[in-house]
Length: 604
Image (tube, rainbow, N blue to C red):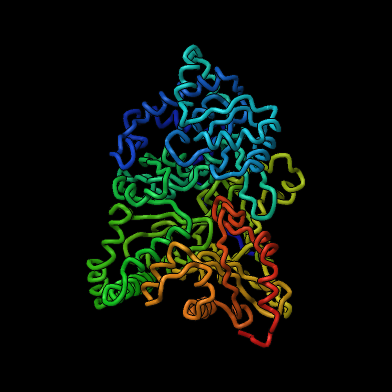
């Protein structure tokens, strides 16, 4: 067993709540810019001071009070990532209530479960379409008194409704919550069944945020720090960053439509980004595709190799040699500069979580001047529980524990977490809570290793470990992540439990396919045709060989099945946080898995 603690950098504050963080920021920096709002599609970004934001929060909180929301009541928020999400979130806390985020892509049955299990009293949704989804299950939600629609003036309606509520009532309610009081119920994305309601307290956020603002000070607390949020605020990762910015002083922006993300990044010019690995894979693959063919493509690939070599050399005694530094300068002028410009030109850091990034991409981005800080966390830990720091980075790991956190890896490789950010339990699930929280430790369900410096490496989820017929234990995540790095691959599910060898189901990326075909001199074709095309299959076989370089022969992928159906949130195979629902895939594509093993002599 191994264990490592990162000491807390800030003294604990048992009485503090998220409302306290905003009040403290107002007291020390009322005229500082808290966030910037975009005026119209592609418009300029208008600054909003801390004082102006607090004024809007209090006015909206009064409207919630006038609407009958009582301290401790649950208020659902179902919307894309936009300013109003943050406004409603903080207004709910100011009214003494509890926010319940709902992914804006959620189906009616998911809404019914979340709203009924949490006991939602009032719901704020973004669009009429969202309201229609709620309406489908409204009869099953007797406690839900009202649904307000942002696009139909919900904010104005609430503000007008609350004009007669006295300021003293908001002061009183904002002061009610202490650290151990419930702040939010966030429902897990449900890769293994019905979502569980994770109960996070004000203290969970306060302690993590205050330590994070110091521990990640070079990223989030510099006078120039600014970030554009485009991940769903229903996800704890984005919600954590939103609260961090209140504490750290970083300027925050919201990007509701990812189709406009690149122009929004160019105009907002963030210094740090927050994303999942799939975003970094897409940026790299798109850049390679835009390079075209011939000389331009050769230059791009050379520049990528230089970036990776340069980053690797940074971790060696003496660092990059003179020749490599010269190549790096040339590659920077020809390629790297353009990639940085596409992200706004000022981005120094990116925080990546949700799945392993992979060493190749980590080195590539650091080599072009964007330091990707890979981290690890769960809804149950209020987001980050380990993260690489600018001065404490080991690419390929998810870093040391967050300040104030202890990590333990037991003799079975199971990862356990202890610290003030660990949730208090699953809502209405005492049995599951008792299994997850043991003697002050949270059993994450993930497996990994801790090195002597306390850096954590994730190797997979214990529930996903595959045991082959030969008794070999295989963690699928590493193989899946490496194979998914190929430009034309969208999703990968490694299979082989109780089978003679490891195989994989692979889906194709319909967006990347046309450019990849052109680059390789192949005619245009749809996904169904490409899934059977000999040259496409040969390319995928080569990608499998490269992925297999990371594992032993017994763990390597021998055969793949290329599916003609991609895994998406819409068809039920991805969660809103883009994790594959492995059980659903294995059930619905059982025939395709069986076909992999019809003739084991192929041994492919």
